[in-house]
Image (cartoon, rainbow, N blue to C red; front, side, top):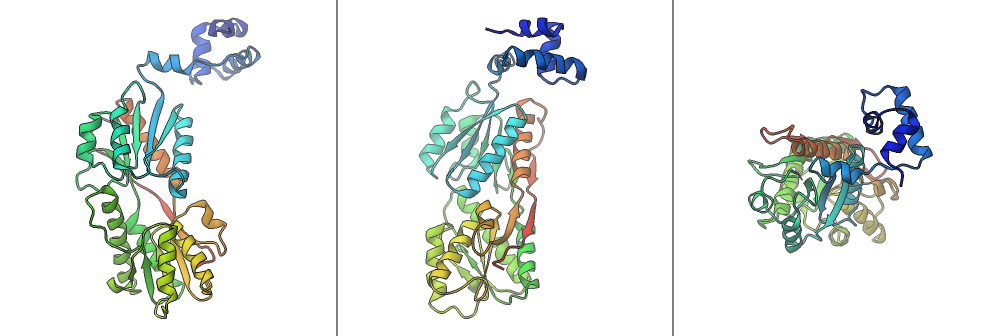
Length: 334
């Protein structure tokens, strides 16, 4: 078995220098670093990351908890977080909860320092107070935390700014009366309800500011394909007042376009559809979906960076929040 000492001997450097070179330590000169890399490659030497992390008292692993890996939003977010973690020399465990309260709690109770160094959480059932009771001071970063006094660093969606931009875009495109698809209020105590209610509230606020509608222009449905079918059925019964539909996520938007097509209502000829998320499949639908495109790469990097700072003890002060970036993507649907 090839050792670091063998690599150092072949490169004519000390073991310490060889180790620093393979860590890409800036103190090692480029020429020396290349000699070590060439030696390692010729000997098929692979660094033992596990041993390196164990010496530091860390595993080099973080956990990402999401409700549904099959949902395009969460799969895209998972990919970006995994890639960001890799750039920082970390590996990612992805746990799917299926929106289950029991799975969320059971996984959080099993997670401890030897298993992973920190957590990135998009949870729907366990509140922050209970989360603190379960994981204690284990480093964690949350997505879409709408607590008034958050206990953890978090990455939030740019709800107010993006909704305003979306409805201003629709107004500038000449649309006069918009309905919000998925605009039902949630009364549940769950975190999911708080997030969805926040989004609906900002969408309604922006729609009123743009003079494109009011509380009577909400079409209630779940935020999935089945919800889109139900919304389309309502629209297809004779909705002559709305010329555009703002969907609370892109899955709804894509599903609505298909459902309307099946009813003989063409987008954008007869009705316009606008989404929210910026998932990749919206660029391949017919027509392509106009939407609020979130900066998934930026969201992921912010979450991973904040988590690393907590893991390494660099951040020990107040809770931090990062607001995700966005842009208006002009597709063909609106």
